[in-house]
Structures are given as C-alpha cells and as structure tokens.
Image (cartoon, rainbow, N blue to C red; front, side):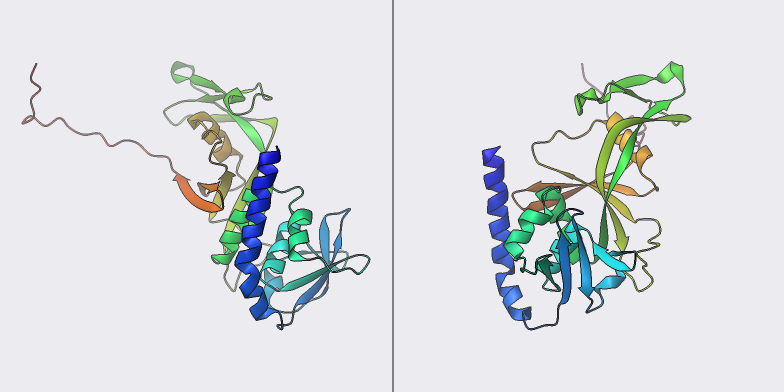
Length: 258
C-alpha cells in the first residue's frame, strides 16, 4: 500500500512539473471561479468565463456544478480557480489530493488525455449483467469468479449467435464514454457515444471472452469497446471486436510429408 501511494505521489509530481510552464504562460488569462464542497465532492461555479461550459458541468437548482475530474482538468489547463468554502485558494497540488480521493489516478489520466485529444469524455458507473445464451447443445459456462471472487453468478457463452438472457448482478463497472466534440454537442443530450473505454493497470488480468460479453451486453448503447492500459503515466489503447477467423480452402499444391 505504501509503495502504491508513493507511486501515485510521484505521478502527481510529474504532472505538476509538466504543467508548470504552461500555467505560467496562462496565469494572466481570465479564469472562471468556483467553490469546492468537501461534503458533496462537487465544485459550484460562481463566475463563468470562456466556452468550456458547453461541455463541462451540470445545472442543478440554478447552480452550475462540476464533478471532481472536471474540476481538476479545468484547473490543470488554467481555466478555473477554486477556493474552499472558507475562501482559501486550492492549489493544483492540493486539488490532486482532494479530487482523486474517490477516483483512481489511472482513470483521471485517461480522462485528461482524451479531453486534450479533442473528445468529450464522461466517467460512468454502470451495473454489470450476467449473460446466458439459450442453446443447450453448444453451451460453455465460464464463471466471473476468475476476475471478481465476490461474485458467484455465471456467464454462459457460446460460439454462435443465440438468444440472450441478461440477469443483473452486484458488480459495477467504471467506464469512460467518448463523444465527438462538435458544435452540435449538448451535454444535456449527448446522444450515443462513439466508443467506451475501460481503464486497466498493467498487472491486472485481461478479462476472458465470457467477461467481455458481459461488458458489451451491459453497455447502455452499442459502440466499440476499448481498453486503456496505464503504466507509470504511459497510456496504451487496445480495442476489442467480434470476428471470425477466415476459412481457408486447402491448397492442393501443398502436400504434407509423413
């Protein structure tokens, strides 16, 4: 645990250093203002500047509220200045501690990377479902216990397309929804995402085919599924897709010698 905390601290220092020159360059630019609520874990925007608000925040009770990852990202790019309720400024270094209290560093790193790449990224928590294909003649059962020992339900998978029965279980999957950032994008009605991204650490086991089917059937919309592997701040992306190995006709000119 101590080693993991040290690793997170090192990555925070790296992120701070990488943004130091940038922050100096934009420190005179007008910034929006916000107040952090440590109880709700939300930032209330009290003074809006710029065009960020077509993408960030949700309006509740007449107030524009930001989630922790949104707050930290806007602070990183120098677009937002945040204070405690008592009026004391929150530094960027302090913000990493406050905003990532309930969020994995790796998830935030991927969120920040995708936002800077021009996407709109939204972190969601979706309930997972067990999958059962109805065709007893070609059923192969795989238990979810290989990736989550607390879950005893089984996923049933087959090779051919079959009718599917879905059953909710107690697992929740944290995932990133990706949208194109266009002039027609509306945060209140974002539409169907162009992709989903699951964040993994390098030492975590890659899910089996059965678990992948559970992921895909649990997604709210049909879209491509990708994995982001975060290793010491470096991000690699893997995509998943359904497909068949092409059938090759035997070549009569190639003869096997016994």
